[in-house]
Length: 299
Image 1 (cartoon, rainbow, N blue to C red):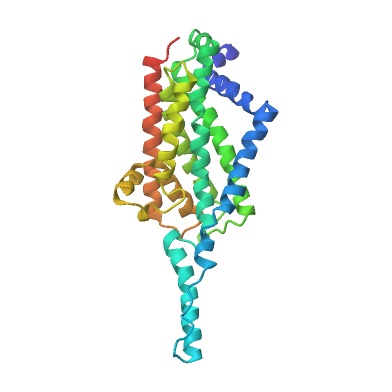
Image 2 (cartoon, rainbow, N blue to C red; image 1 turned 135 degrees about the vertical axis):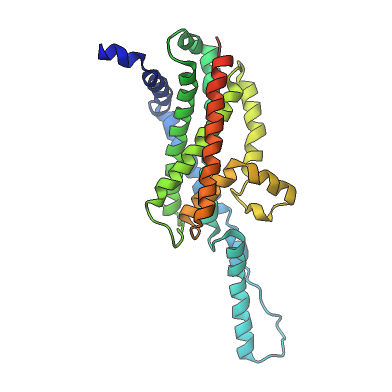
């Protein structure tokens, strides 16, 4: 009797569909290897090659050669100019290590590009006929959508964890307020952004039967979402019109939250706002996905 009741539980259908999508990931050795290696390549090559910090520190400002000032004063001025380069770097990025700034931005980069492909799963299930079979079962349509969302969330969090571990190995320097428990907050912020983003991309694909359409939409959205944020460069130094876009971009807030928890001196008020924004973003788009699934998810 209990076995029959468990099989009718919405959570049972949700987990069965989620596990089906995850099996296609972790039981395919080549696919699993590629999804693990991809973030390693990004953080190892792109992260170290884009060394903007060297622009400040490797080319210090020097005094003109023939200044009529005492040598002791000249030495003090040269030291002050050398320190100025480091101060400019810290004032621009909030840290003297650009790799640390960029490495934490790469976490949202991984979340974005992993969740983008969540909608492709529905397109393929529809084309292969599996979606029709699921829709003919007692499984709730909301569970079908949530299974896609949860599988994308789990995969993106796994990849983000690998990127973060590798970033520490490659030299990410945590800030003065960092503690290991802060990592729980980091993954909570990443969970919320992946929940919201995967819901958006699945909503786009909910009625699609052509994967070319989904690819076109992904290519249209990925770069604006990435570059209209503080992933690679501080939003405060962008043009005014782009700052306005960055202020509503959820990726800006997940980047700020992860940097607050790992890199910067902790600003509790700003951190609470970041989590509130991400929580509202995730809740709204997840709810919209479930509601629209009842209306538009059909055979």
